[in-house]
Image (cartoon, helix red, strand yellow):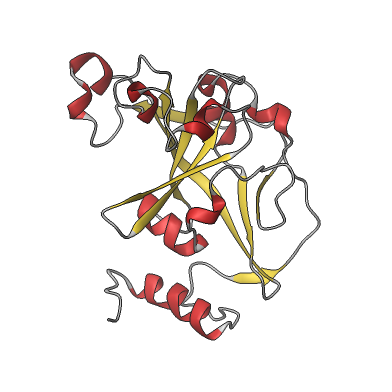
Length: 209
């Protein structure tokens, strides 16, 4: 069955994976380029509270290196925090399970999960070991929406628990000390968590310059 694409851009991303070709031309919002020298963020960046990490992630570059040597670079613009077992919108609110195990590790690893049987969502675990929390990647300058982010990165279950400081295929780049202006607002689609947690202003959006 052929996938259904909501935008021409998503179709181009899909075709590039199928044909292993570099995306070119003015019509492409997102381009595949050759791997560049890394200014990778280390584990220390992530081993802080999610409330500190999330605003610092805005404007950073998410890098995906593919097996054919091509590289996709996305500038992060929209994130959400999920923080602790007490946060009823966080998967860890159900406790430590095989699914949530990565959330309890030291910050700096990947937490991915599948929704609607088709979208892999990307999260970066933050904080110290034993304190489950993560930042969900919701959007970039080039790709909007967490499901589309996962599709553009060609994510799957194999990324679960991957170390961002050592992974040869997924990492973050940027000046760790650089900050940007942003707005905060309630997270999307978490009404099920109840009035206290549904209104937490834990959605961070980069302000346009």
